[in-house]
Image (cartoon, rainbow, N blue to C red; front, side):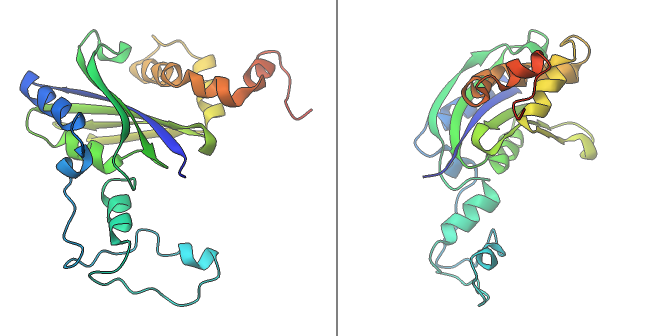
Length: 217
């Protein structure tokens, strides 16, 4: 079984565009609708992780060819960012604190191992979409982060990614005011969104830090 990555996506755009995204994510195979899979019998799919075999002592170099087994896995990992469609999808209109009272479409869901970065980019390129802000957390892998996709920004500002180790984000939030800047408002919301992960893995670790202690002492 994979580690499950918890994801929260916020989408801003026209009413028609947001309704389109909602219908896609509430369908049976939203990722395949946003980025359709190729015909694996005809398409040569490169290996998503070509060096993994070396970790297990494999010396023979694998050759990518059409019709090979598990090509779907490599394509999905490379193009979607995860190997399966999402689980436990919930959609609805929300007003996150970092959007200046703007109501946007929110979607909560889980993915295998990692956030579906390719899907977020695909959503941002749909007609009528202005921006996508996505948040992801996998407490077992100790990462938490935000990804921002802006349709009309300058090329070097269209995609912004900020990832933290969970301890690192905790310290950023602990030592800052959410009203200090848009960045800090976003980091506080990111922390609060996945606060349950801290409670599950912390077991007093963050409380000890508050008291100046060290869990390893």
